[in-house]
Image (tube, rainbow, N blue to C red; front, side, top):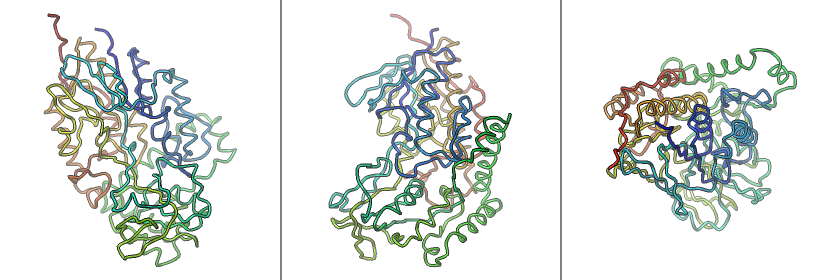
Length: 488
């Protein structure tokens, strides 16, 4: 049986890893498409001031393409983007990427037939295998606030930063205080005239100064045998400790909360501001943020923190529940992404007209976060319940693409036209996975980890090493291998 043809949707870390893995193991007919003008995924789009990764670069990088020249603990966006693009060229997959392609639908009418993906401009691609690598953080969200179209000033989302708009001296509103805002607010605060930050809920913080590495350390990483490997191991264990705290909120979680409390109190001298920013939920229920610059930025003379609910946007600015109108020239949306929508609004249809949107109407689910019954030879990277609360998503992606490749090779050995996870296997897996959230911090508040039904659909409920173990080998008995159609 010949090797399958593969269409990968998305040219971020997941899509590039998939192309490298497949090509390295004899699956050569691989095409990667992306709506963006280049390789990079979220790191191509998110160019806001101060953009950097929360995860240290020695871990937030492919294990097979390590670098010893990272400039600092958590590299800035241009450095991460350059790394990914360099790796794509180094491993010979950059030329496989077709940019400016926004896939709007993917259809497989028969299990023994191919997938056909259709782009917004009408072009189509046909392939035996569909790998959706659009990730969880690719679609910016702007909340539906009354009057949003009436604002007389300028607005943009942080994930689509308008670098032509000069913020110097302006009155700026930032709506949202998530991970992106925590990075760009300290960067723009010294430039703007007045900055009003609108917060819905506070965050738990841990320190991250992220200074440039000194020359001696960079030299040691390059020259001392085993230091890079030790560094990755140390960071891995630190990240796993965050998950330990989230999984055990009554014990280890209290240690994390104490550490965060001492750090935040040391940074916040103003008791009124401290009261306003203090989170009212269990440590770890929402994403724990790393910053040593956010809280000091809120204490600047030209920065105010507003905690009243935003009720409307008016031509002059932002109106809050207390009746005040905050007059501003610019509104920046730091309101995150449609993380629980995954590949949607792309319409995915399997044999018999089965709709993935209907299948996921009660909450997204997939076996090992990758494959869904009824959708043969379709795989999702960074899919349902594979987000990490403490660790590197790239580690998950490497295990996923290896698992996908081994599954396809098993289908090839059997002469199958397609491979599909058994519905009973996926159903049992999903029930066990959801049960693991019971008693953890994740269940103790509302967060972007949950969809509209309240189901936690983004996060993996355990440790990185557990996901490594679950995806280490493919069990053929978990799958149905479809026979190819017979010639008439």
